[in-house]
Structures are given as C-alpha cells and as structure tokens.
Length: 264
Image (cartoon, rainbow, N blue to C red; front, side):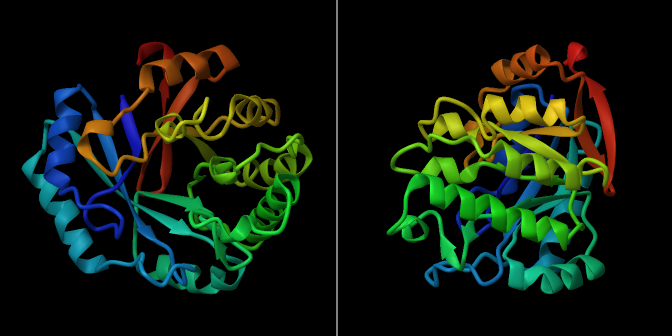
C-alpha cells in the first residue's frame, strides 16, 4: 500500500518530524510513502507562510531514503497551491527543482482563502463552487507541470450549506484537459476525518473521472500527524474497485507506475 499525500514539519501547518511518520508507515505495513510539502505562494492569510528551504528538504529526503533503505520506499513530492497570477512563478520553481511527484491544489480562489471563509462571504454555495471550479479550469489550461490534481472538490469541505448542483460540466472540462495530458487525480481520504461523508473527491466525481477515461489515481491521507497515515485506506480501495478502477498509481521521477488494486 502507498500513501501519496503526507506532510512533515517542512510544511508550515505541520509539526511532525519525518521519522515519526515513516516509523508509523512501516508499522502499519506501507511499502511506499511520498512527502508532499506545501508551497503556496501568496497565500491570502498573512499569518502563515507556506514555503520552506528546498535544499534542506532535498537533503532530508535523501537522508531518510538512506536511513530506511530496504525497509520502505520514500519519495520526494510537493503540493503547490495554484492561483492564476502565480503560474509563471511555479513554472520557474519546477524548472529548477526536481520532484518525484507534484500535487496541484487550489486552497484559495479569487485571492481569498477557503479556510477562513472569506471566499464564501456574500454568495450562495452554487456561486462559490462555480467560481472555484472555473478558476481551477483556468489554471490547468495554462499550467501543466504537475502529476495529479489534489482534493479536486476541496471547496465542499468549507461550505456551510452544500450546493444543489454538481458542476459536472465544468469538472468534465477539467478532466478533458488533464486526462489526454497524462495527468491524474487523487482520492484524498482526509474528507472523512474532517466530518464529510466521503473523501475528496466525492463518489460522483470519481465515477465521472472514470467515465471520462481517467486511469491515473493516487491515494493520500493528507496526514499532518503520524497517527492518520493511510487513514480509511481499506474502504477507499474497495470503493475504487467498485467504481471500476483497476490500478493505483505511484510516481518515480515524475513517471507514473501502476499497481493492481486486486493485489493491494
């Protein structure tokens, strides 16, 4: 089994040393994990800075890979927080730094963060979701340096009232952009940890992705503490099988590798 969305104390919102998470991952039998630290340039909340020392991160990953060699595979990833005005800056970043795996996420839209609720002020759930998905579509039409889209329907986590619309037409357009380009999505199990009835994305979007021909899918706990590594993975694997997915994906130097779900 593989957990492909994990944070350590290189992320501004996490205090967990890598060693704790790695030990926990081995304890529960994971074969491979990928650290995906936050880089979220120009994040709207000035009280937190989602950047870190990239050279120190590379050294630490290499140290962990050497220390745990032959016991667990450890990959170097990053989670970048897109906004339309930052695409050139992220291209420059990824020209100069190499990662096994890149999650492309949107934690804010229209220059407002989701977490504080400012993005949702003065409009309905439907208008909020529409704005969020349209901005994501705009970003991925002009940015391609990523492996998968992270928690594609994150906007739902922060809604006070769920939308009566599913926005499948916009999401289908997103999938039409990423699937032919060899990009994928993740099933992020943290949704259930945060009180949602499902992971992210929800089952209907997972089915839509499959219907559109999507095959690249990773599984990630979005853990910020060691105790939540591989959270809800057993049920998530069964869900993916039921929908019709055949493989779970990992990445090595940006290249996807496929493992049969039936053997996990």
